[in-house]
Length: 163
Image 1 (cartoon, helix red, strand yellow):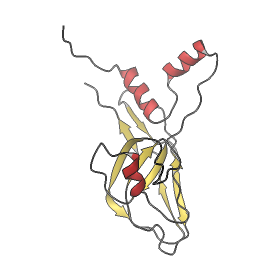
Image 2 (cartoon, one colour):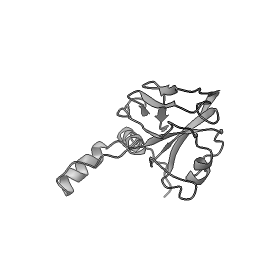
Image 3 (cartoon, one colour):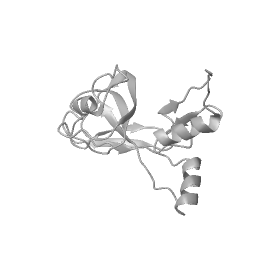
Image 4 (tube, one colour):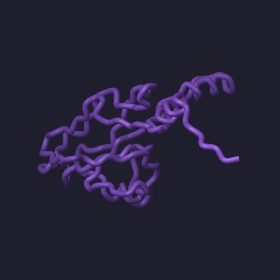
């Protein structure tokens, strides 16, 4: 017998919390029952990109090759608010700052997007982690010396669509 299924609201919220690195209520309940402890915190990081990402199959090998570069740049941990049950949307909860960049030109190339990844560092020779989601900017951002790039709370969001 074939049947169409659906993702329940709590399932969608738990999925978003998992993708953003937050502990889920289901995971916390499971760990409390099976191990008697709290879940270990997980983190996700934002990397800035210098080329538009056009393919959902983009992997870390590709992303490391188009990651922003410059003195003062490093991937930043992203704080996520709990996913909203009604909208199944997770948004960033705090200010995130990259830089300030001390190179005379700021970052070496304009920032055209960002990717949410599971590792704070990677290199072209060892691109570890996974890409959870990528965003392309409507307008590239060019930085200058001693400038910092800031993302306001709520500026990034992920929505899980269910029917």
